Length: 481
Image 1 (cartoon, rainbow, N blue to C red):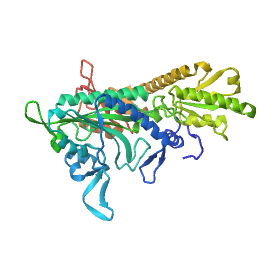
Image 2 (image 1 turned 135 degrees about the horizontal axis):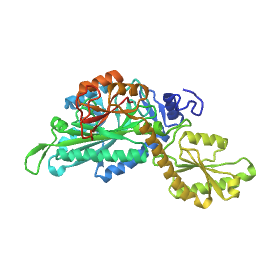
Image 3 (image 1 turned 180 degrees about the vertical axis):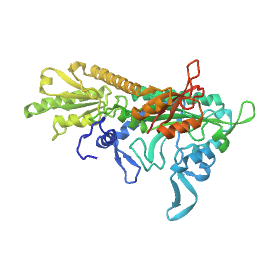
Image 4 (image 1 turned 45 degrees about the vertical axis):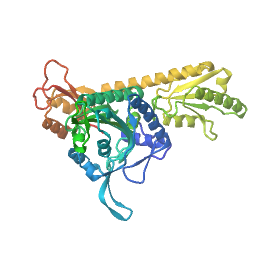
């Protein structure tokens, strides 16, 4: 990667190198000493805190509480749900020693918390009065991703939230699955300004141990899909394995019904990919660490004091109004250098103030997403910044939607599907019969898998794109990260 300060490649010319340069040079992350791991730097962590803060409030409004479970899981617990265990074996880090001594039973570094949480749930749940149990965890998990790593997208350790709930009935659990799915969809589309396609996973792609999995998928500008979040109906698979039972209102013992759901810092990676440009980050205002940067433009000493004083006043006005603002009055850097640095960091609005602005009682505002300059009277500052942030959020959402729609195609023949996957990429909507043999063949022959499934809304049943048998499902095929 180039050691120059700014991004040295265009997004449309070398997407992978562009992404790597942006996340490193904007100081979101750094590489760690252990292969496959990354360091989340302060600027990146603030974005995660903003995401966390918004979602945490939303979860709590629905009645969820936060908890924390240990990061090491005895192997015997992880083995209790056989399909779940076998699905995670290739990714598990194992702890075999404590100091210089071998431990009796090896411990798994948490790949996900179902096993360790449900050990406790079996002790806590006794009666229908204890339900629903609605817990969420903010933690990190470890999965052995050593090859093809990508900051935020695929690393051996990542930050996320994972919800784990227990319910009286199958229907109550299903309602929870959909409630969280809608919450995620609203957050991703309205806060991150990224459109999503929502549907179920095929049995081949669902979470190991789940009855079914609902997923949110977004399209990236290189034509690859990215799983943004999942919500799983676990049925009674885990409650039977871990002995989570309750005395029902009918005075009989019943196995509980469960869900789990989560999103990770992958959301940050998606935001970078979808909204960033060849200058660097473009951060949606609703999660931006800094919404506006105030830059005094000083070239002559005789005018510097007045400019700095006025710029400082505007900075105070903005912070008093509740905006996340920064006042950049650093010596030794030209205004142009500062402009480029804050563009790299994706700050939504730049406020420029020079001697001419002061003489005319005006302020210059620049939008990061389109570079448009707006000159306003000083008295309009707070109102105009408010409206500009809303406009930027809306433009980012509209632009991302247009990109996603351009990458969504339909194919009613296998030859057409193969050609689109090969030449264009993106989502390809095609009928699928539900037979995993067809799914496997398409994956083997094209590299595309089923990202989500949706129920066919047509009156007549179309034919499966691969075998020609009747189909009641529309599959979104695509290559993915």
